[in-house]
Image 1 (cartoon, rainbow, N blue to C red):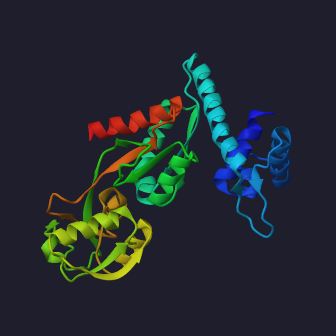
Image 2 (image 1 turned 45 degrees about the vertical axis):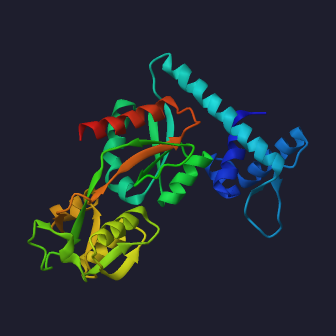
Image 3 (image 1 turned 60 degrees about the vertical axis):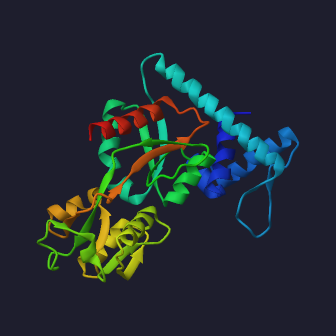
Length: 298
């Protein structure tokens, strides 16, 4: 039994797709199916439920045990590889990182470049999704690290703070607020706003702050990603409150005007998260240290 077979099985379970597992491991779908059958024959246990007409991958009770132990084997194997690489002072391997769009698109790229310049044999594999999915993927072991805003303490999850962001108000250049450098939250009462969707942490925090000041705004539209929100503000749908790093380019290009919110509440904490019971690879530890160090310098 090869270590690659165990990896294929775990990828299949985590990605819930024979085709995606095949693509990730550079084999055919039939090869993935054959490797699963080989494992079942070897251990004389059914590991996956086969439901005709359905594509989802469902583990049997034996499959759940096997998947858990496979993850332990793969983690030990990867740790061994890292340790052997460390004997010659070489940091290598791929660190799988899941993050939310606003952080991944606007804050992580320079840090990834810095990491790659320091450790050229290592690689950061970035995936983008919602906060709930990021945390779920970290806890399931599908990714090694997550980077999220407004992290919530959770059993089994280690949270390492990065530099916090300032939330700012944005408007189009022709708006009456465009010449303002600062604005008080009370002045936003009754204004049209383009908002994040309700389950997104930045929206929850924004709603909470507005409510604490007794301010109601009108919802003109709501979206699940920062880029659509910015474009909507540009064309005049309404105002928006967003993390400052996400609008620096638009501010420089005069596409949007950025106005400081006067109150001290408008802070967005950002953190790296990983499973408490997981031994991070050397490359992952170095990446976390880099993000944490940058936080302390800010």
